[in-house]
Amino acid sequence: PALCETFSVSRTVVREAVKMLQEKGLVQVRHGTGTMVSAPAMWNMLDELVLAASIGQDESLAILDDLVVTRRLLESDMANVAARLATPDVIEQLRALVDRMDELVDDPGTYAEHDRAFHDLMMQASGNRIARAVVRALESQVINTARYMGRTERALCVASNQGHRRIYECIAAHDPSGAAEAVFTHITDAWLVRRAA
Image (tube, rainbow, N blue to C red; front, side, top):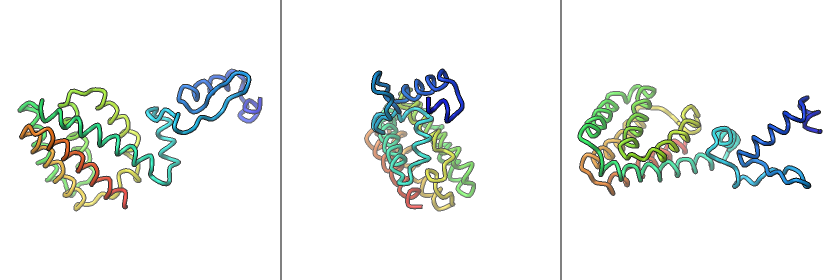
């Protein structure tokens, strides 16, 4: 009744809203005792609304740290597989993207588009559709967030593309452990620079 009065809505609307919150893991409905807010550890962080709200409220950057760790682990594994499975066509496409990014270091916006294309191609080459979907879903929540993207300047683009070139070289050499390590280092270094800013 308090929610109905506060928001000027019917009991049906409140019931549906609580049901949606329960599906997202934000509340627990216990018949006889009421509805309780769940501990954050129970929240569905893969739900885009929950993740977006959590990122928006997190001043410590802990959620973004967790997001980067998750992305790093998944992409490292996908790079490992991509280095084993990459066809000559995929290797050529990766080389073309790295070469093009060298030309785009003075255009951070276009550079970022090619950066995402490079990572996506590598993920596709792994054949792991679920891991790729998770990374893409996570990144879609932060791609326009200044706290995640950080500064955009020439030196950072140059350093970033050195990481891409190392990843490409390992995949081209069919070096799974080298590719995994290169992605791990690239994502870690890039986040530490962005996070410090």
